[in-house]
Length: 104
Image (cartoon, rainbow, N blue to C red):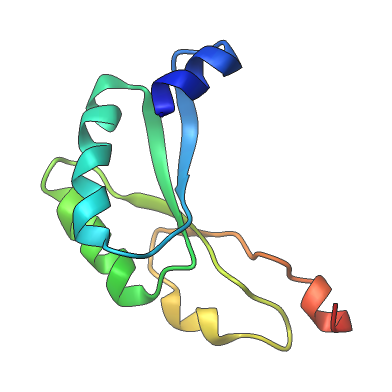
């Protein structure tokens, strides 16, 4: 699937590959390692993952010398539970930070 996207984009790599579904971290994480080693994926980010899922992904990626480098979770002034997913060294990127403030 990534190969087809790279062709359509006219590039040999993506800077950041987002994993949006936290289901079965142990299953999808090993598939990223060859993509990272080949340079087709430069960095990995996760969205909608809790801290234990991020730590598991980091453990599995870490065995090959890689790590999760960005997180994107639902966060706003009213919805702050993703603060529990903060991890040292990870770039947090809030999803819908203003929308939820206005109840949209």
